[in-house]
Length: 120
Image (cartoon, rainbow, N blue to C red; front, side):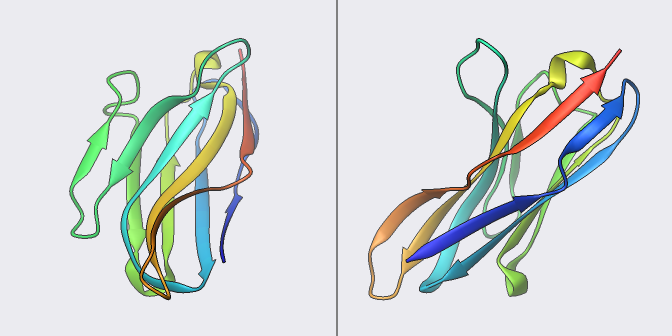
């Protein structure tokens, strides 16, 4: 069993910054890609950013230049630094991890989400 626990969400004014963290724990052999997704009010869940085990990153066009994804492989943790936040960034942010478990089963795991609210 693997758990993903997000932290760092909250309420911030437009133009402000937040840093999200997501720590994976449990029966982990290795983690391939990790990422952040979000679901705004009345919207479908969408990709925000992903990062591979070797550090290659991918971003949604809406966050390029404002958000930075990073990871600490030794801690099985992924981060999302969010700068210049806009009201349209308001959403529940979910962590995702592509995990090779012990024993060797590859499974996609999701965290429970953390709320980010940006006021105008």
